[in-house]
Image (cartoon, rainbow, N blue to C red; front, side, top):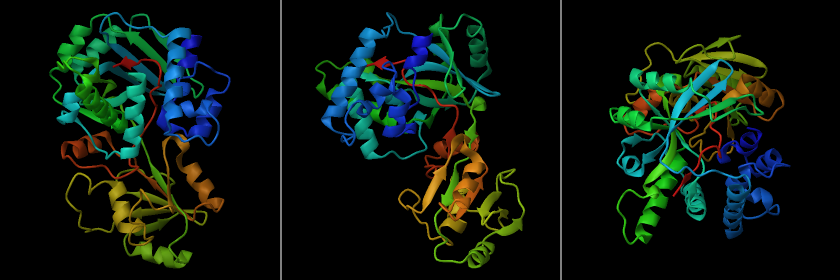
Length: 395
C-alpha cells in the first residue's frame, strides 16, 4: 500500500514545474516523473521539447519494470472512492468510446487550447498510454447506485490517505458485465473535468487510426480512461476573482460605478448565500451585491450564470476587463483557498478588489452542456481531485 501511495500523484495540470519538482523530491516512484518529466531535466528546459517526451517514456518504463506496474490479463472495471472531510463520492473507472465523445454523446462545456492538446496528445503517443483519467458525470440512476454499494463491501484493492488528507480507495469490480449493461440505459455522459485529456485522446486515436493498416474499431486507442460519477455526488467549489487596479478610478468613483449596476450593501458576508448574490472585498470591507429589481435577464443557459452576470455588469463595464482569459489584471482563486485568500491579496496590495461567488451548480453545468454552449472561463472548480498513476490505459 505504501508503494501505491508513493506512485499516486496530483494531476499534471494542477501544479506547475516547480511545485511538481518539490512534490516528487526524494520519491522516484511519484507519477509526476511521468506526467511532468521536465522535473528531471535542467531548469529552463523547453516544456514541449523532444527531451521532455523522451524522459516521460523512460520514466514510465522505469515504473513499469521497477515498481512494478501490473497489467490486467482481461478487460476490467474498477470503483474509485474519494473522501474529503464529510464529502464522499464513488465513481466507476472505465474506458469510454472516443466515437461517443466525437459524436457528442459525451458532452462538453469547455473550449480547449491547441497547445495543451498538442502536449497531451504527444504524451499519449510517446507512452502509448493514457495516464490521467477524464472526470465524467451522468444523471444518477438508483440501479447503478445499488450495484456500487454491493461492490464496495468487498476488500479494497487500494486504500490510502494522501498527504493532503484526501482518502483514495479503489475496488476491482468482480462482475463488470452488469455495470456495462446498466450504463447502456444512460443516454449521455458529461465531462466535468478533463476536457484536454479527452480531446487529446480523440486526436491520438485519429493519428493511430491513420497509421493502422487494419483498423477495425475495437483497438484500445478507440477508448479513453475515465472515472464516471453520479451528478448528485459532485460538488463544485466557487471560482473567485481578484483584480489588480480599479481601472483608473478612486475607491469612491468605483463604488458609484458599481451602484449603477448593482444594489450594494455594507458589512456583508464574505460568502454569498445563494445564486444571484455576489460579495465584493474592497479596502478592508465586504460589500454585498445583488441586481436591482426588474433587471432584464438574458435568455440562455450561460447568460444566467453568476460568473456571466458579474462579467457583463461589472468586470467589463466598470473595470474594463473584456477577455478574462488574457487580461493580466484578473486572477482566479479556486478550490479550498476560499475568501481568506481573497482578503490576503487585497490587504497585501497584490489586488485592489476581489469578488466571492456562489458556486455554479452541477445542474447548471449539465444544462450548458445540453445546450451545446460553453461555460465561461474559470467558472467551475471540482474537489477532490483524482490521482494520476493509480490506473492507466495502454493504447
